[in-house]
Image 1: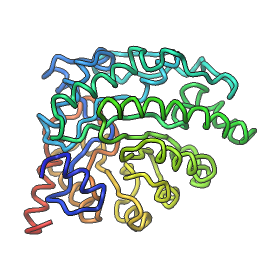
Image 2: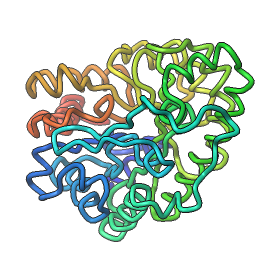
Image 3: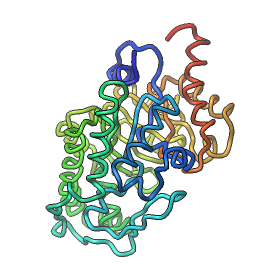
Image 4: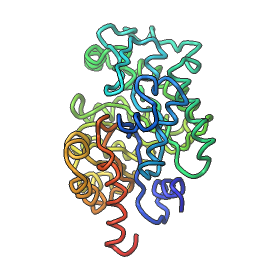
Amino acid sequence: MNSKERVFAALNGEPHDRPPVCTPTSVATVEFMDLNNAYFPEANRDANLNASLASTAYTQLGFDTIAPYFSIIQESSALGCDMQWEQKDNWPTVRMTNPIWKNSNDIKIPKDFLSHQDTKTIIDSIAILKKQYPDDVAIVGKTMGPWTLAYHVFGVEPFLLGTVDDPAETIKCLEKLKEITILFGQAQIESGADILTLPDHATGDLVSGEYYKRFLLELHQELVEELNVPIILHICGNTIDRMPYIAETGMAAFHFDSRNDPEEAIKTVDGKIKLAGNINNPTTLYSKGPDAVKEEVFRALNAGVQLIAPECAIPLKTKMENLLAIPEAIADWVAERGNF
C-alpha cells in the first residue's frame, strides 16, 4: 500500500496497513529550506521553490502527504491585502491595521485572482508535484474558509463585532467570501490536488460553539458539495464544544489542536468524522525530543485518531529528528500490536 492509498483508506474507513502520518497544514522548516535552497519568502511565491520545499515531507520525512501551501495568506495577497513577507525564519502575514473592505458590498473578486503570483504559485506547484508523484503520495491543497478570509479583509475585531451588531450582514459577508474559497479550491483540484485542507479559524479562543453552528455549519456543508475531493477542516484552539457540529458537515476529517484531549475528541465526534492530529507544536515538536514526540503519537493512536499529524503548521525551527519521530512512533506502535 503506498502513501496515497493509505491516506484515502484511512479517510474512507477502509482497511489499511498502518495509520498514515500527514501534514494538512505545513511541515516546512528552516532546515529543509537550507537543504533545498528554497527559502521564505520566495518559496511562498515561486512554484518551483514551493514544490521543492513541500516535497521534503515525503522525500525526507516519509510522510504520506505533501502540502505545498505553507501559510494562510496567499488568497489575501491576491485580493489586495497589505502583506508583510518577512524572511526565511518568519511566516508571512497580513497587516490587518488597514483592512481592505468594510462590508459585504465591498467584496469583489479581482479578475486576475487566479493568475496573481501568490495564488498561481500554489496552483502551479500542485501541478509540478502531481507530475512528479502522480499516484504515490496524496497532494494536499489548501483553500481558506470564509471566516478566516473575513479576519484578513475586514480585520479581526471589526468582523467579530459585526457578528454581534449585525449578524445578517455577517452572513452576507460569509456567503460572498465562500465563493473565493470555492474558486481557489476548484483551481487546485483541477491542477491535481487529491485533498483540500480548509482552515476556518472559528476557534474557541474567540467564539463559541454556537457561533460555529449559527454562522458556519451550513456554509461548510455547502463547501463539501461544491468541492469534490475529501476536505480536511482545520480549526485551531479549543474546539470540543463545536466538534458535534463539525461532525455533521460531511468533511472527510477534522484537523484538531493539542488543546483538545484526543480521547474526548474521539468520543465527541462519535465516528461521524475522521480525526487528524494532534501532536503539540510549540512544546513537544519544537522544544522537546523524539521520546516526547513518540509518547504523544502513542496517546493519539491509542485514543483512535485515524491520521497522525502535527496540530498545525509547525514552527519553522523545528528539528528534523522530532518530525522523523512521528512515522517512527507509528511503526513502533504497529509492531507492538503485531497488526493493525
